[in-house]
Length: 205
Image (cartoon, rainbow, N blue to C red; front, side, top):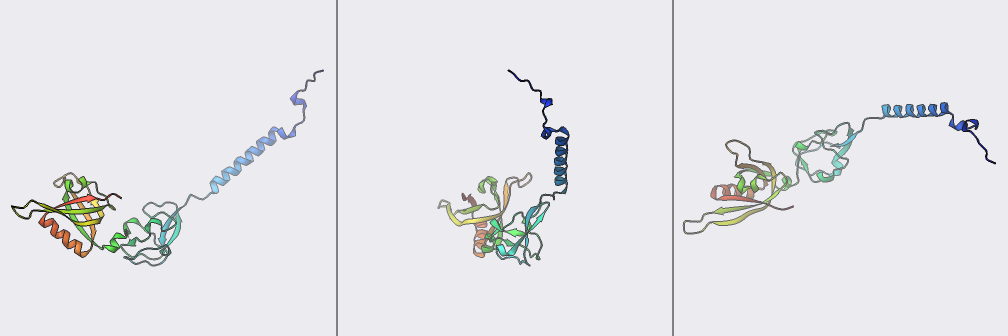
């Protein structure tokens, strides 16, 4: 014999609508309170752990971490990371943030002098050099009417500190470069620009 039972005849207090609505409203209220009281996301930046002087390689002990709402214009991170062995251009006091413009790569500790070269872009990798590249430098010189021009390697692995690509105007075909050098290389390059034609070859990383 079949038995017909209607759902509204059963007693199921766990499906009470008012109770479910109350629980849902309580959960929503808790979520809103959590969202309103949650602090803004913070980003870690590097600051000086103590007074720092320029021209000395940075280590992990030189930096501390501070959390801020925005890292724009500052050095983001929680460890020294890739900035290990970099140095400062100017001193900063303990607690001051590190800023990119005050940092210089380790190459400038080994080769503290900087020389400027202005070359036709056809002799400077078509102007496609950027800071951080390394280049070999060749000089082609004419040793007399009866001798063919001679090309020689005068420097290798020279660090590009800055490269300004050609711009519109009078010097639209020239590339301005800053290269890290020691005194001997500075003298050699200064003489090379007067005595012959300079060509740069970018070294693949």
